[in-house]
Image (cartoon, rainbow, N blue to C red):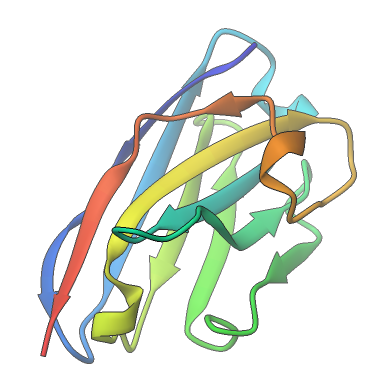
Length: 124
């Protein structure tokens, strides 16, 4: 398993931006597909974005497409989620996740490692 620690969350106004980071340790970071999920109060955890081990492929939920960008730096063992044009509907705890192999999936249960989450709050 790989250990994951998110950072970069906070409070931002509507239309603002945040960049989340996910630092990985314990195993070969470049062997993992990385994902981002979020969970709002009273709702199920939902897929946000994912990036392949090389960074060459990305996939986004329709709700964030065009506003969020996933990236990674394998030399720094870190994945990122750049979030622009934020709205109150983006308020949630954001989690990064890792899964071995190259397949990108939106299914929560198929991701083997999770960070502790970071709170993102967007005020109106």
